[in-house]
Image (tube, helix red, strand yellow):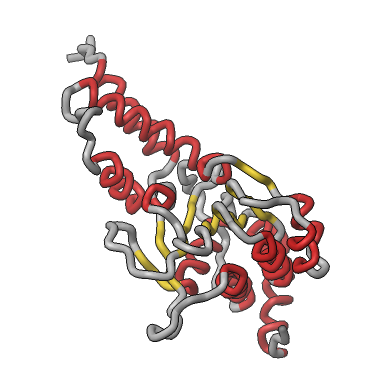
Length: 265
């Protein structure tokens, strides 16, 4: 891929002004592939990732990995396959992440905020200046499940031809990684704010605490939960909770289960 002289000048300008910031953004972005069925797609995705300067590949329950076909299609990016982290759950792959963006090829009737890949890359890059973020891709046949999307705070789509929007997994990864790189090349990333978003681990502990509290007060019936937990997750996903906010909410949940009177009142 060839970049214009203007974009290259912009890139080097950013690196001169914020060399550590630029490197931190690349280091804080991970690409997560969920239940990939074809090992060749993993290799091709690794090539796409490395081409755009990203380094971190996570694989959630791949059908076949490692595999010689993945290595063959990586074409020079075999080092990413060697360093890839394989997990059994998406939650494990998102451990430590402050923000996760799920990719979808179709409009989902969920309450997630939905943006195009370019806007998603810009938002993610700003957060990645100080905290880890992830782009999550589903299986080739059906994409991400609703349960997997519930682990994400944002939904992104690639605005492809509506008459034929089917993109190969590696091609979708290439588009997203390109948009991430361009977000940096165009100089739209500023020095990060001091606000610290809650990590995926902290959010999962909060959701478990919330569910426990709702059962304790009789609001959630574990035998007939319907979609209450999923809807609550999406409410808080849109809020993009900070670390301190999660601590505050968990304090409220604790006192909801075990009320106590303040001696001051």
